[in-house]
Amino acid sequence: MRINHTLRALRCSDAPYIRYASHQIRAFRTTCTFYSGHSRWSKIKHDKAQTDARKSKARQPLSRLITAASKFYGPDPTSNLQLANAIAAAKKQGLPKDFIESAIARGQGVSSSGKPLTSVDIEALFPGDVAVIVECETDNKNRTVQDVKTIIKDHGGSIASILYLFERKGRIEFKKRPNLTEEYVLEAALEAGALDVEDEADSIVVYTEATETKAVATALAASLQAEVESVEVLWTPKSDTLVNATRTAYQLQQWEQFTEKLSYEHGFQRLYTNEQEQVTDA
Image (cartoon, rainbow, N blue to C red; front, side, top):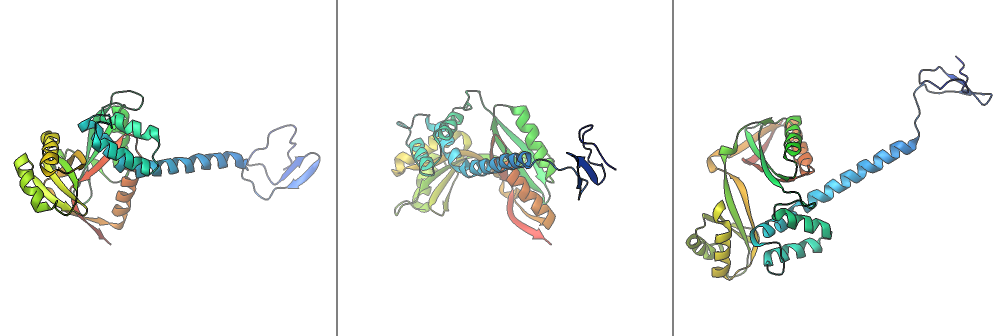
């Protein structure tokens, strides 16, 4: 078939000869050809989104430190040593000023734009009896809940009421030093009303009732003459609910994709599970 280019537009299905500018050109394919500029721009936007998401994921631990310090001891680093230290650590890692200010604002319960934030926990169950709590802080609760539920369902999970498998606790971290050992901290911690003390790598960690977190941290900092590295309240699985999850290779892939996707979700703060050990079943 011959097509007059000046009379009608070229269709993808037109057969192999094209008349253009009084010349015949052999068409070696019958699929549409698009200008590469559109695809290139789409790729640039896609790559930028992935880069921004990776940066956001890497910044989350520092963000939590700043937010927790702001929440427990106030937004002014000149009178809040924990916040000052967290900000210094963030700056050392090259985090921008607006990111730091946003984390401080979240500690005061507002977004960077000044909108009030709502805390929300989404509960779910995954293969292997793995219970999860997805902790978020958002200025649009309905959107965040719907987005997180979709991510859960798309990666093999189901929405379920599992909150009773966890308990809320305060976590207070002190940096180790020669005379600050687990045994030394334990006595003072019990006197201050703490629940437990653990030795973790470079830190001594004290657990307490969620409502007593700030009071215990303040008391221990004074009695131990030690600087508090971080303070936060989190969900911990009850000891009798821990599981050694067995997953197929496909279920493991789904789980890894789930945690990756979740880390990029707007408002996501932390993922809690009752998983003690992960086993892959071939």
